[in-house]
Length: 337
Image (cartoon, rainbow, N blue to C red; front, side, top):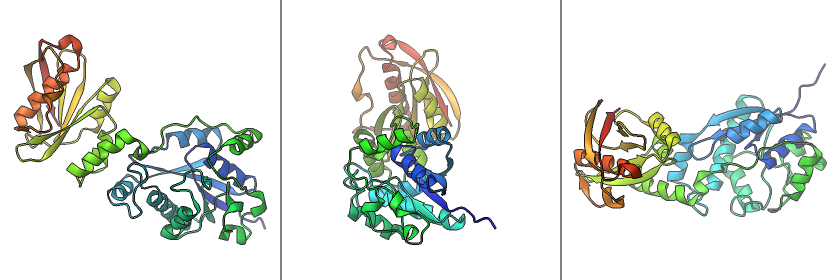
């Protein structure tokens, strides 16, 4: 009778470390599935490319709402910016544990390296992740430097064939990748919560709109971001696209009640206004005078606008970003989703 293969679920970003974790286990004849979590703050595009190149079965799970709730209230606090790394990793491991149980995997592994990230990959942090998630995690690249896991104790994994890598240097990983003839994409993306500029945008949104949802967060990735006051003292969000790709993205993210501001006869930015109460649908065309010089105060965060005043101010700002239109009267198209 043929014995069934041991099955491992490996958290997979597509980077070198997670790729090596997969291949180290495959060398022990373990059947591996990569698991990538996607959210507003990190994608699985790199993981998909790497999995395709290296013939890895990949499972993608969207956890946008879970991560957003965690960012709003991280039990273990933030890292350097707005990144709740320990709680984020714990959430992912907990999600992986449920998949492991429901789909009959034998254990969970990650590509984490002891000491590579001082805040989230030191001994204390790794142990805290285990405690919060409530499940054992094998880390093949640093296993010999860490306590023996149940997968090792039970003989599912041969500990002597695992590694003892630590620290931020990547020489050993690159040597092993070359030896195994692995191909991996160049580092790309990463977590937006570690980006200072994005974190500053997100901090404002969490302050002004504490009940913000995933679609609101997605808008912060694009364009020039402004906040203004309506007469009700409620903050509303304005995004002005910087190029055709961003204009297209804003159009796709627009939802019912949003106001789109476009140049009717000229090429240039598209703007999106969210948070203004008004007509539920419809569109109109009107003219505005664009000042000779770009006025950054056109959208003042301190001024209180009536809805109609705000739309005109956004229209002027939108046209002002096209140098050839300054000092001219132009047509603006308003679309209410």
